[in-house]
Length: 233
Image (tube, rainbow, N blue to C red; front, side):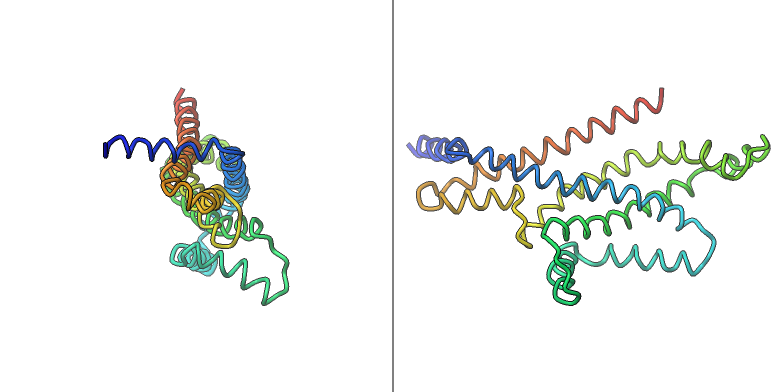
């Protein structure tokens, strides 16, 4: 009987997802999550590439400024940055930032710092003789950088950047605290709406949310693996 009661509770919990538009709402929330993450990732890749190149410069002041920015972004929790962007900037400067815009801003700043450090490490890991070989062939500094250094840097960046991207996707769950209606927030709304009639609804809802996050990150992992194999051919 206890086992039968438990099975019945689980079945009832998952039945919540098929009621009305609950599952469609979760997918809509996932789209918001993916949209925020995609915008932040694209901007982070672009700005991070530029920051990484700047971080390899020999100017001490420039390198110190980049290091301070990097350490600040690493030390400061993303949730605090979200609060500063969404609540602080709007009150201090009168900016009208939506929750999604504030989220993209924060994750772009964070992603740019992390990606910049990855690019710096990848550039500095290219052996010195690669530069010397290019010079021996009579190539200019620009030709050496774009024809020899950049391709090798990209190969090193693929697995590292995919790890950062999946971290960014998972961290987007924090945007629920500034009122963005993404997948976790939708799940909370469904659970709250069925709190009295189906107390076990949270089991099914959070299981599905976990599965949705897993699918997105798994597909990215497959894409990264395919890209790595293609580069080795």
